[in-house]
Image (cartoon, rainbow, N blue to C red):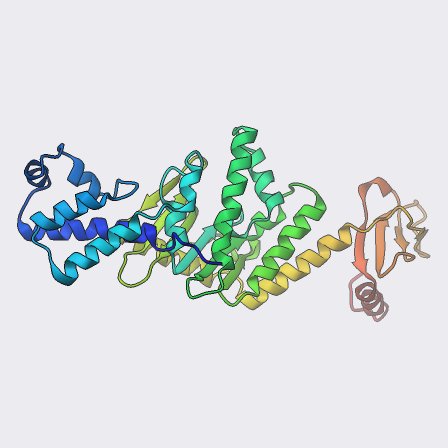
Length: 351
């Protein structure tokens, strides 16, 4: 897909930085420039802090004139302003986004995510998004709008041209095993993760319980990198906002922490296998047991405690405790159960 607003947010940020550089070259203070142009004090400061929605071309030309910029440098400034004026899609979701995070995500060439308790927004299914939003205090109208916005954000990973970003994420086993929605919803989410992990631009790693917590990182972190020499930004998600981190030393610290988390998680190929296995296990647990014919094991204990097996279901074998049939059953692939029985008969287990 194409996005007419691609590059607009980064262009506006770069424009702000270039205006600072040009003013400093002249020796002017921001207030001095405001006085020269008969602007209210603070206007230049807002421009240089990138606190504007769209740069006005007349303002930019006034600044270029008093800074004495011409030739290629002037063309560069005006080109950045033109690109920065493009209205991005996320401006239609002002009640959802309180900063330019979706714009930077939209313009990124690399997106790195660490999510300790939930799944990354770019990898969530609609059912997962709805379930996550329902846990908060937001209104149904807000949740509906937020769902729409999040699905729109995900389109960044559907691009087919050179603007497709590299996406790397570290998720945790905990985020995969929470109970939410229906079993079918949960399986759909896991299958979606497995499918995404096989894409050429996606690197997904799972941090299992046995791997221990990541060293130096515990927040929901998005690290976005941009073309050329544009500095990387970090966005830290909280319950109510997404906070921007731009200090170079802080950004470097988050990058180092992300690399440590990646190192201690499963390799990408192993992650895909893990997800596929988990999805298969979920599928088995969804087996309809209403037609199961249960029989007790031949070596039942005299006190009535024993295992019951249903072997009449297609492709699977179900096992349950006869004393607690209401406690549910373990459903196992029939071939895997046959292998287990063969190993048990050969004494490979301490039974």
